Image (cartoon, rainbow, N blue to C red; front, side, top):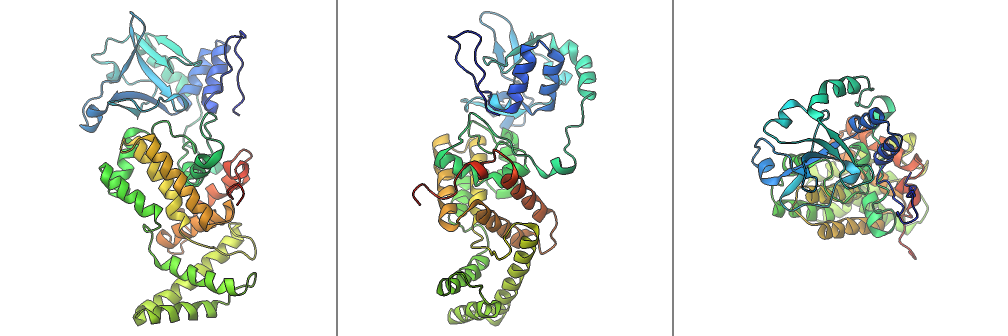
Length: 401
């Protein structure tokens, strides 16, 4: 929880641990339980900063040290909640602890410091000599690989990040992927995963290796033009029919006929008419499964599939920040825009989620109900069922809307 920790003296301001990891580190430090501190550290993602040019050129990394005033230098290691705002010429990269021997080669480092300048700061002089003991300590810990229900994802919150308002709402629209990837859902400090991972996913999954390419993909998503247009067309036809008889179910045959007539008037080919009829049948089958799995209420249907584009726009915007293709102001604007678009097309978090999942499975699942479906259904359940989830603390509708 994001409960403030009050300073020992009245003049010390209250401190809110950014995440549960920093709270656990603080508590272990307060007990002087350094083995406990290290167990928390070894179980968490950890990062160090490196010169961006070296990382981009795939050269041997020289980590940016932390220098004590007029004293020795330490390797600075950060937990995710204590990553700094983007630094000029430096990027945050994942680093495995305990440190491998090569990390220390050629470095005149006194040791390691964790989260320098914060309440969880801890110095470990001579860290390279402690690696064998630290490895033994780490090996005593449970596996970091999630299993069972934990493998479905995790809702991770930054208590010092956006928790209210339009920015938080927009970030929550990207929470399917955040939960699936076990990333903080509401963090815009620096990287999403780490610099190398953020640039890699944009390059390999989105064909974006530059700012211009990233912005182009983001704009496609915000316009709902990344996904194929056919699903949204047939759903729009159904919405038109439903407006004529509010509350009444739309007869599938009427839906198919209306879609075919519209396409015929536009000069569609016979194969395109057949594809539209088959698509409607696929949507109906998916909606039946959604009802069985709780994605839709017993009489519910999906309003729009564009939520898949809008939700992914949030993640692409955040990856762009981590890859240094944009500054925070530009990314915030994109995230707020995505949230506004979701509010325009949907009426609730569950309504939006069903649209997101339908857009995903129509594109990638082929009615297999396999990993592409399961990896969206699990975050849906986590986000709707977990106390403190943004889908339970943030109103979906705009104030006064």
